[in-house]
Length: 149
Image 1: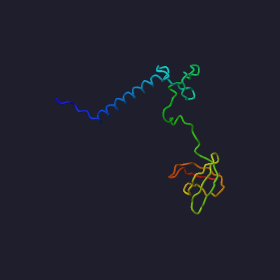
Image 2: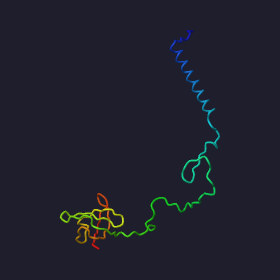
Image 3: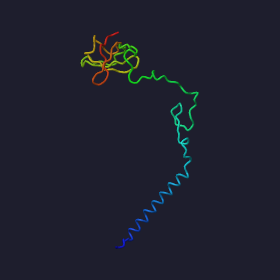
């Protein structure tokens, strides 16, 4: 039988592979020696009442009992909601009668809503106090059923 031929390149690659394996083993042993603990108790993290991670267990006296039946998942039912008055009050901030549109500024929130001549029940002009309802339009909320106060 013929003897296996080992070339210089093969010997060098084998030396590099063995050196790499030894280095890896040394690093593994160093990590084990330098780790500050390996027990399960040292690895546990707790969450305090403010949502922060901590290594001390929470105080049992601060524990709050939550009734699982009181947790609502999803949107509340229609009968559970408070009735909100759909009629709002505001002032006409801008109105152009020739073009047939303008803006109404709500009295409570100071938000401005678009109003079109088709949403009017009577003629309005700038600085009139009005009552109105809101409907979703193509570009946001629109004032409809607008009346002078």
